[in-house]
Image 1 (cartoon, rainbow, N blue to C red):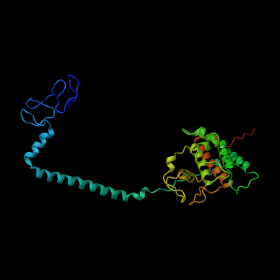
Image 2 (tube, rainbow, N blue to C red; image 1 turned 45 degrees about the horizontal axis):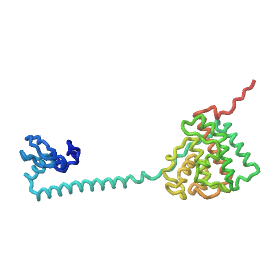
Image 3 (tube, helix red, strand yellow; image 1 turned 120 degrees about the vertical axis):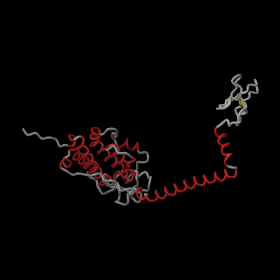
Length: 296
């Protein structure tokens, strides 16, 4: 490594190791004969040996090949290197093209549902259904639901299902009311009527906490023809489809901006409760078991 500052006066040295202030001259000792040379010397002034390995290698190469032969050798090896890289690129491209079909998005795996006796007799589902019937009283389930009714359905799920998450979840827990989820989902704007799009976003936000879902697990492509890749509705629509929660207009068309009925929201909430009770049956059976009747 070449010294850049004078050891006497700390002035900047020239390329040859000479100080213009005090006249100090840096010398490099030749390892072969011990002669002192300036730092920029390519050959030793005492023995004529190259001061660096590259200089000695170049001198040796010049003894075997003339400059014209050296140019031909360089071009030959440059051609071999370029050809090798080109072949590797060509084979890599063939491999990527061959395996491309495997990279296509796969159909979402449906979470299984079991309607056994422990689910049908669950006090949690009965309580949730009773609350849903209460808000549907004196209303037509086949008419378009208002945004307030969507919030009411979310609040009924929160009231009846949050206890399962508090007992079984490890990292994520649901919020306390639908208004908190509305504040969290800034893309949703409260309007007169609920749509399939904002209903799906609200349901997915709650399901993500209730079942500890990971957003990245549902971003592998949507199977609905009106939801493109990387759209905000890709993950919610895929997650709801995997849990068989029917908020979409059909199996092929989701209908993001279409209105949704109160009956569809209630059916979706009922389906969520079934999955929640199945989770409780596995991890906290005492939550979903019907109360024990003691006959004296």
